[in-house]
Amino acid sequence: MEYPYAQFTPIVKGIRATGLKARVGKLSKSCSPVQPQSIVPVVPSSSSSASSSTSNVFRQLIYESEKYKPRNITIMAIAREYNIQHRRVYDFYNLLTALGVCKIMQKGQLSWVGLSAIEPTLMQAYASVEADSANKKDIKEVFNVGSSPSLGSLAINFIKMYFYLNVDTISMRKVSKIFHDGKADMKSLERRLYLVLNFLEIIGIVSHASKTGVYKLNIDRECIISYAWAMRKNATEATLDLSLECLLNRFDSTYLNTLYGVRQAVFDSICV
Image (cartoon, helix red, strand yellow):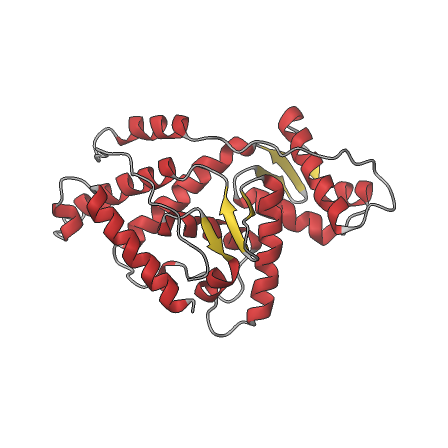
């Protein structure tokens, strides 16, 4: 095993399908919101084209956007002002939009929603994974990103993997093997994942762990996992599924820890 798995996080007990809306509100309030990262002020300059300078520009843009909530963000204007490749700016804001931080107003124009939108976006995204995984037993089927996934899709699916395995550190190369469909170029996929993880670091969602290629999740996963299991329980009851998990009064810690152990074993068997 390349790195030790984190200890299992206790799942919030007593989740039931009834009163779910109220429960979601409580879960949302218990999560630690993503905060703007500390920034190094960048003065627009023809020389600010290095990778580190680009990262600092993006950190500064996040910080200022959280403060002023701009409603007219233009990709080309940012690229010109800070002398950054248009494609890189587009990629960054495409990922922010996928996370719910921005929304498209019209072609070429975005509006800032806020970092607070990341949590509900991930809650809904991961809830669908748990609902679907009841019927999809294969991890590669659960995380089928296709042959040409967008950066936003890669970002959300990478983050969802932390919740699916209930861990706080993951190897990028291991995840790439799960995402790879056997057709696309693996090196190309890895390059795109590195770009995604660089953006997620800038936002503050992940950070480098002590081992090369391993990333640590910086947001609270407990409430997001709890919400997903509430939704899964609701879905199984709605379909009158008589599986073991539906017959249980609740998803207790023994059942969940066993399930996570199985998932992690399958993950490792694919990613050797």
